[in-house]
Image (cartoon, rainbow, N blue to C red; front, side, top):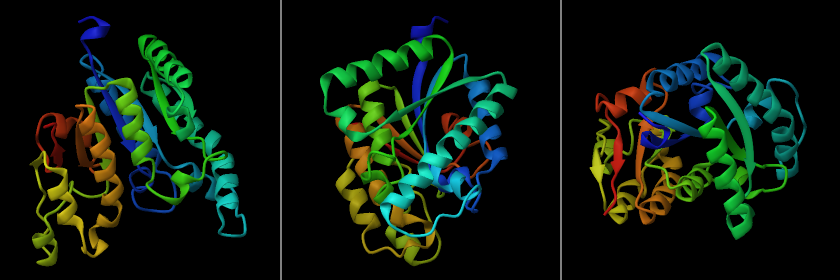
Length: 256
C-alpha cells in the first residue's frame, strides 16, 4: 500500500478527553491514543489537533487571575510540557511526533495556508504525526470558545482530509427528547445540520452538550468541504478503532 493510498484522519482531542474529565492530563489516555494510531497505521495516517496546554500548565504552576492574558501565559507554560508527554509516550509505541502551532490568521493568508499544507505533508510523508494546537499566546478566540473544534475543522478542510474525528466526552450528539427523559440516545447518522442544532437547543448540559454547539459549527465547516465528521466518545479506550469498525455509538455527520 503506497503512502497516497492511506486515508488521512484529522483527530481532534479536547481537554476533557485528555484529562479523562479530571484536572490533570492522563498519560494513559495519550498512550491509548498512540496504541490505536499504531494499530491503524497501515491504512490510515493521522494529524492531531490537541487541546490541553492550559490544563498541563496547572500541574506545574498556579497563576493568579482569570483574564485571558493569564490563560495565555498558562498556555505558554503548558504547551512544551504537553508536547513532551506526547513525544515521550508516542515514542515508546514507536511513533514520531512534531508540533505545529497555528492561529486563525494563518487561515486567512494564501501563503501561510500553502506553507501549512506543504509542511504537514512533508511531516506525514516522513512518518511524523503533526500535533497541532492553537497558538494561544497570540490568539485569544479559542481560549474563550470552542476547545479547538473550529481549529480542527479549518485544518481538516485545508488538508482535504478523508475524515474528521472529534473526540468528546459523550457518545456523540443525543436527541433532545432522550436527554429530557434522562435516557441519552445517540443520533447516529445525519446530514441536515440545522436539525442537529434544534436537538441541542435548550438542553441542560448534564451530558456535556454545552460544548456541542462548537462541534456542530465545526461540522458545518467540514461538511461544506465535503468531509465527513464523527463525534465519538474519546473517554472509551478503543474509541478510534471501535468507530472505524462501527462497534460503538457515535454521531456521523455525513456530507450532503
